[in-house]
Length: 88
Image (spheres, one colour):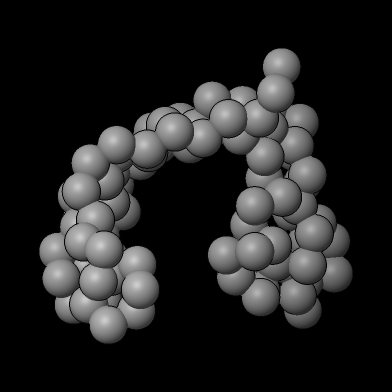
């Protein structure tokens, strides 16, 4: 199955452009067999990541102080974090 991520809710255009990072967001994110490899783009602490993840996240607050709630399940995945000898 292909990796999929879908989102619905509101995020101000100014926040996306970078000059409204203090404006509030309310975003529901659904991970349907999404790829762990996305972690390598989100944080420099992750060197490599592989495997599928499923779950739902609710992002509120603003981009300067985001609040993330939800649950994510990973099966047969691995993540290599910088400075940690063995992958998780």
